Image (spheres, rainbow, N blue to C red):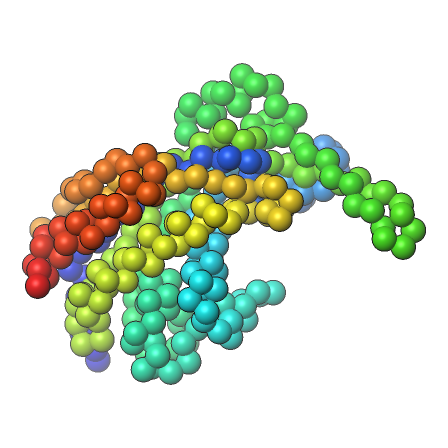
Length: 268
């Protein structure tokens, strides 16, 4: 049995600002009451919209796979993702090592990246309450589809979180392992996948209706923390930031990676 040991965890904490309306779909049960064709996902206890960690993580993975030109060869529901099919490919694949592969893949190791759900900030909750939005915390956007054959207009309504709303703090946790099948130096090197995914996200969109203007986001107030496995502390040590933009973070990236290596005893 292969030996795998956790030696540290890197924490990414940041805010996500909606630069255009954000439409991350939820359950459409009961939508006939409000007459909205597509609703946003909401916290069942507070009724407030949030960004699911699965949506953020999935979008970052998808964008990175396409950026790297990796084959989309693994069906997941109606979509496809990349999954290495050979152990020798997996050993050097930053995407599969970071985001994981299906459990049935015999040569898999622990998924490195965990992405938490992201709530609205308390300030955005207050602002949206005061704004008297169309629905609680959200706006309704009407679009008209034109039948190209009959020219009949078909209006549809979509629910979105208004531009200007801020979600946070967002948290991502990246684990670093050592052992028979894990190289901690490689894990630190592959942290660049997280930086890349966030940069790609800013130039794309999050949620639905992105090709029609929705879902543009900006990453702000980024800080980087670290927990060394021994002793494993209750709170991370914040080693960098906060940075007001990804560009500011990028300028310090190599310094941050060097600090992580040194604190984990991996300095070369």
